[in-house]
Image (cartoon, rainbow, N blue to C red; front, side):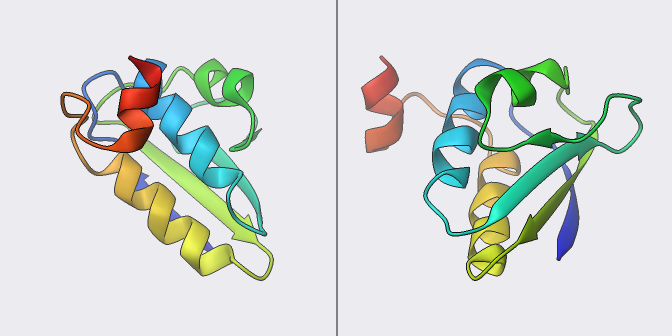
Length: 99
């Protein structure tokens, strides 16, 4: 299954949003890849910080998220949530871990 999502966080897929995405992707029993819809870079594993940040996706750009496995739909839901919310001031436990 797949979804196309517009990236909302101001930092795009760098720093905190990328870190949250990678941690989240690793929580599910699913193989998840992500790629820039309008880019020319190949799809990257959502479980790889280097792969995700290497896509160089900026705020407002669209990405395709593809997930396969028993938790595919839940993984897509969680990752879409990260990509469609502005990153706040560290209000959840995952953000506090990075401060």
